[in-house]
Image 1 (cartoon, rainbow, N blue to C red):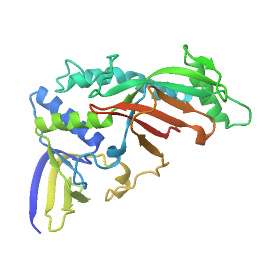
Image 2 (image 1 turned 45 degrees about the vertical axis):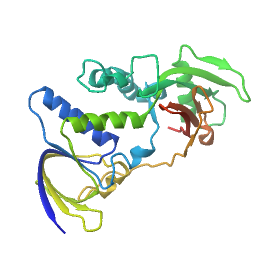
Image 3 (image 1 turned 120 degrees about the horizontal axis):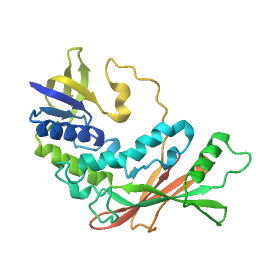
Image 4 (image 1 turned 120 degrees about the vertical axis):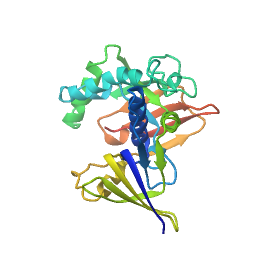
Length: 289
């Protein structure tokens, strides 16, 4: 087995959408300030974005789900995200694919990041259900000035929101293109073995007969998602996990993005429509939060 030693200003472990986004933004900001950084992104997968990010069909949250007083700070963060996204990736930001970042554009044609707005169908609060979830349902209804009460098999309130469906694949594609142009280096099929206190990371090539690589970095950023507990020498706090079932249906069977929010977990479902240059499809999933 061969060995190679690399040096970088920043090492990012994890080539999902989070790792690629961080690499692209760091590289772009550093170049703008006249102090470019050498950045390496490493991942055990053979291709970029094949872990958790590969199955994502994004949902851009404007804060409607964080309407309770207990989550006021989370709501403020979500509501400020539009300005932050526009400043970081919109026109005037220096991002090479600013036309795709349509955070302030009403249209949602294929190839853009954001799709159609999301509408919540919120069940009416009822006696006997979980009090905390009942308060959340009521807070969503109270916080929506344009909410309309409608009748169906069960009574619900129709709440239009500023949430949008989001094409995660398009976002990841544009981040990869920009980061590659900015000189970010990708080290794929490289499984992390250890990180020393002096920030020397050892990787083993997962392919038969592959090489062993050591990367000495000034900074190390870890974005490996569900593999967080595998980081050598780090004991993260206990993580609460829940499996969300997602089913993609082609062609899309709805022209709207609809999320049903209920006091009962099994009734909380989402239907988000996604447009591609060649087709449209619906992503169905458990939308419990």
